[in-house]
Length: 182
Image 1 (cartoon, rainbow, N blue to C red):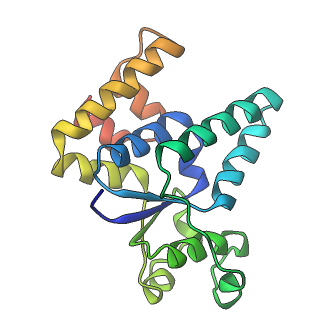
Image 2 (cartoon, rainbow, N blue to C red):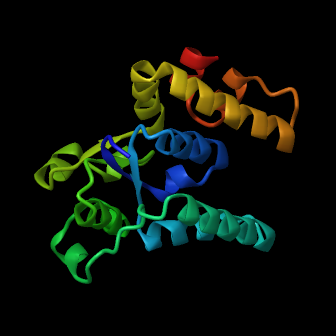
């Protein structure tokens, strides 16, 4: 797989449609997905807030994602986070994972807690999923259209056969991508 190395924040891994679009692009070889065990655990804990069944489902999905992307999980050296600073100390582990994994980018919805100038000092950039996926779509329209169609088909199968691609992506907080693909 080629392309940039991208650490995917837990807020992008959970919710489902956003995650499936992002991981679909990674699966198509458009970038190299990276995460830490802690980020996957945050995904499971976010799902647990909606009940034990959702946590169990998330843990099953995490196992599938780990098997689909066996090289994505980054071991973060003990102590790396101690030398780092971010406005929210709870997010330092994400930057530590990016540094440990030689990532080019952190993909997050949480821009305010990942100031670009702080990340740049560590050689890491930040982007939001909508912009990132839109750029991938501009560069790889056929691959991204195929990813979007697969995600739409699964959403129609699981929840509502009346979903349109544009509506699904807008609901998933991907409005620019929705406009481009929908």
